[in-house]
Image 1 (cartoon, rainbow, N blue to C red):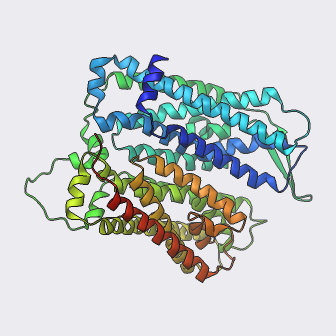
Image 2 (image 1 turned 180 degrees about the vertical axis):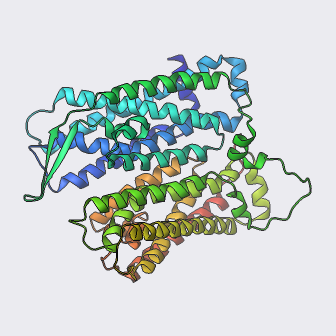
Image 3 (image 1 turned 90 degrees about the horizontal axis):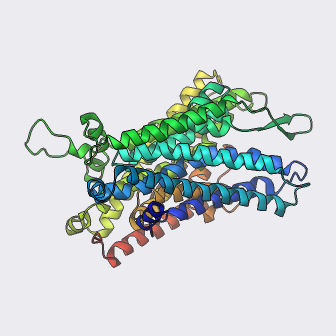
Length: 513
């Protein structure tokens, strides 16, 4: 308890618990949207136990990455690893953070379980919930989340640049989604992000004649328990051995430190070279955010293609059907946090040390914010081009003989306009919130809120929805009111740009001690 109290004091006012609240709120909104209109009172408790592991597989890896990054980044920013070791043993340093993770995830798992029961009772599901089934779900959720926490904590310790940890978490979310639809049971058991899907004990059958789903208790594969225990032991013991043998200044492998902190690389020549790139582009040169840029859209494309090939009897519109599968999860779940990673990384250098004092001497607030938004929007445009290339490749690989939709160019242009809006919002959040991880968590919640708002016909109230609406996610043949769409993009972009400039002009930007 003393170690836990110490970590609590370190994370005071760091928004650690707000991340949990945002995740639970997003999951609650998703379930209310999915089941609120068509309640199945007879199978309701089974539907809860089926849907929430799916939501956990998509959202929890990113949530865990944000939480672990916030917990470890405190020591990296203050360069306090060596100082801590002079005050307490490495054992207490490491396991103090482990205990904090245990308590945090216990609170998350218990609160989610209570939320599920309240949803079931409020909907009026028949009979009483199966206590043993919900108890098993609670144990699985906590254990798998704890495994992911141990993994992310090791990565966060290893790389002082927390962009690496966040990118791994985002890719883990997509990997969990990918494995959920794959028949490879061994891969689900071996890869920790697939454990939410592998440990599910509720199955679903779709009846084409009645167009209804039937939920049932399935036979859970017992060997998943063996892999969970192995991962738990390996990460708990291996993580401790890794931290115990770590030099107090951190690992100094040349390839590793160069990847995590490219600015520390030694140049072969000592002469000063004139940069060929604009300043904001130089800041993202050799950065780890390109890991997420390459992997996330690729996994989304493979999942979408797999769904398309598995449902050819329903998806008969060729390129249009393939686009619905490619864009659905990308626009709502992964593109907003990916833009959040871009924005957080762009503001990261200003937030470190006393860089604000130097930057504001040479750049006006309006120019600085404008440059950030332009670079973030440019990276978004490159991501959209990469997504388009994957879409075309998968379409030709699937043997779609129809011509490529001429509307594809319009989808990309409108998606880019929505991406500019999301970039502006995320740049404002990353400016105001001096944390790398928290704005990314907000972006994930914003994407889900955009999905709910779009389903309710209120897409214009949520800036994150403009990206998916512009790209016609899940409905490529839908007509778009272009003038209304453009107007709301301009409104949100101008508002958050002016808020960013006003914040810089009216707030003391000197980095606090």
